Image 1 (cartoon, helix red, strand yellow):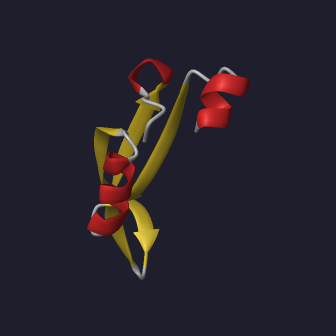
Image 2 (cartoon, rainbow, N blue to C red):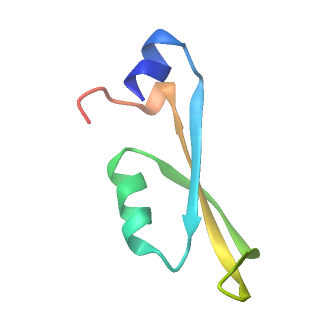
Length: 66
């Protein structure tokens, strides 16, 4: 993210994970992302629709020390 924010002047990053995957959610939160939305029955996975969480991190929110 340092490269994107500092070298490429990217405004923000988006990421997502299945709601049933708390380990991925913890990684995103630890990296400074904030949850923006929860999409109900959004993604087909393992034979059924599952909820997806969407996260974002803006340059103004990012701290390089992470």
